[in-house]
Length: 299
Image (cartoon, rainbow, N blue to C red; front, side, top):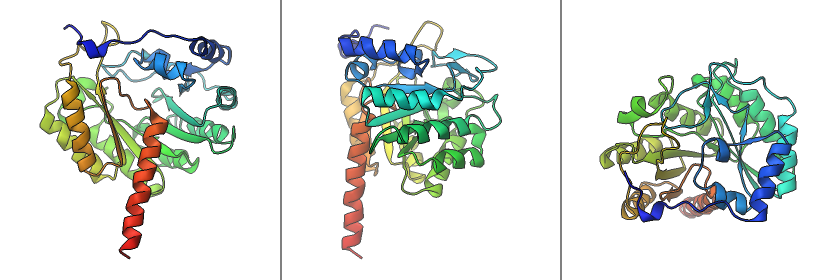
């Protein structure tokens, strides 16, 4: 299937892109930008930002859309990784840091403790540094979620990835649509001040009415931010693209999400969970402040 003109990916450019890539390697860090073949890597790195991938580069799950390396067991956790992550944040002058991870079903807590240490370290790396975490489901463990929430990230993201109907086609068998919704719901109940976020890949065979139903499911658990982007097949090993979604449809879905009450919605071909994360967070915070002001005005 031929890609439409709006899906042309710009090649990496600029000295800053090269410098960040080199420094990330020197610090022994991984980024999801590289591992997942993210189409926004050029734009984000050239602007001096990156989404860090902690707990190694080997995932214990086998989702059919993902190019990250798979294995029954990941690498041994590196206790120094949080410090190096904070060092990178300082060196790059980041004010908004996204931390994500591979799934680590081989660890007793799914890696939640390590996640929390990374959040705390980055929070201490500079004044007013905001941290977003994109977490796995931790097998539904409430204790693991509590560990991450107690580290006080500003945003907790967890992706349902696709509609209810396509879960078993797209995701690993251990991933569960209802469980993912419960993750977002539990985070909000643990700390109502944390913004929650999720993402949908489009172009994998979903029906528009099912996308709308997924929006309703996310709003039912008080999810604040929704990201929708075009699925792009990373390599021939992953599932094929079923449809290239038009720009008009992306815009229509964005307006629908906003009408349903999401504080912010990012909907475009290259949108990914962490793409323009700082901008999306600021928009959500402003919208939330506005809504709170309206409530207070009517008290």
